[in-house]
Length: 159
Image 1 (cartoon, helix red, strand yellow):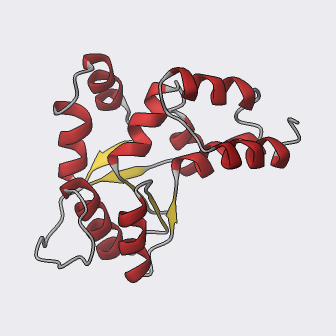
Image 2 (cartoon, one colour; image 1 turned 135 degrees about the horizontal axis):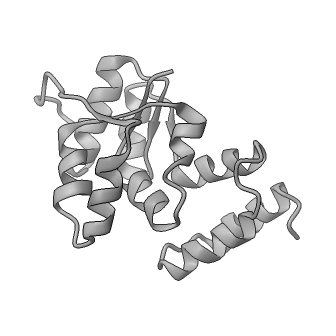
């Protein structure tokens, strides 16, 4: 299975201590150079840089073209992730930004938001205490809409 990731899923999963979920769910994650630069060099958190650099299941992959016109304003990492996913015909692209998701749709790329990765891990029993993960996300200032939070709890029978 080919899975490409943008930076936000890596950062969010690192912050809530669940980066290893990616290995358990997908085995290998490919990231373009711009995403690698963002999560390793452009961070103010040296522990994040070290943790992501040490992940043997996250591989940086070069992209061959950068001349793609997007209809929405997206950052370089998102653009390169979309290009990489399209070029490799990836099964999934881990992506949270709504504008970038709209671009991915235009290229018929299946994208998965980070929250869905967490839900899938909970559904498979990889996360045993989803309530603790939700609390951890809030403590890290990663907020979910009230509706999404309630829907997840109902889905996992936590209410």
